[in-house]
Image (cartoon, rainbow, N blue to C red; front, side):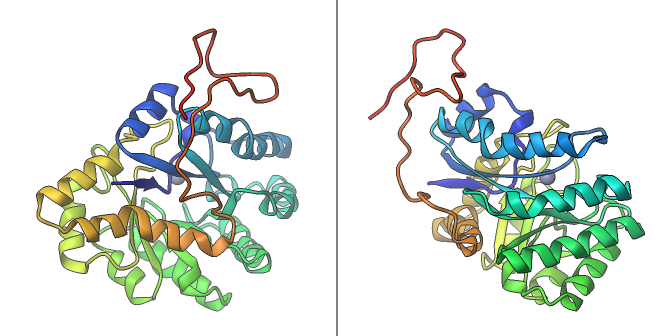
Length: 292
Ligand SMILES: [Zn+2]
């Protein structure tokens, strides 16, 4: 089964991860712009990060046969420094036009501060102007209230539910997300927030329509193989192959295809490790692998 991990921060992961993901059937990923574990102090740091998402990281993925797309945005964790946030917001329109940028995200609330609110609203406007789908980060603390407020703001700003993916859902928030007509993302973590058995139960109860799963793997305790592991758990629990394929392939493809930029997604990847990115390869002198 072809699998899509539509939320993973590959910048923080190793080439072993890429190889293991490809071996497990993952053929495409989306890397949302997010924070890096500590606040950046210059807009230029964001710009170089955005450039790496459409440059080096996309190349690295290609070297293991994985299609890499990204979403661009100013994350809520760094939205409270007004001057810096304004400088990043000014950069965003240029980066939202780039090839392979399939949405605005991940955006939303962390602590629900006035600064977060301002940056969130401005980016909803940018997404509507750029005609791009929106990827929403819901807060990990006070998640229900954060999700309610997110939905209220999305409605107020006129964002169409079918163009919004609300991520990091739990049992508590999923009914709100689905009832609102939004797409529902679930991040499967090793120990917290959501795991394979709970995800199986959610699919058994709510079905596969508008349901999406991801690993949200990054620099923290996380697992880049959570999509294939959850696929296995769903199949073992008797969920039909068609429903599982809808969740891990057709749904993310359908959602992000609304950007008009999910190009080449159905094309079988071809690995050619003789390729270079600006003169550099990932090989460190190894013999390049070339597959036809
Ligand atoms: Zn994330």
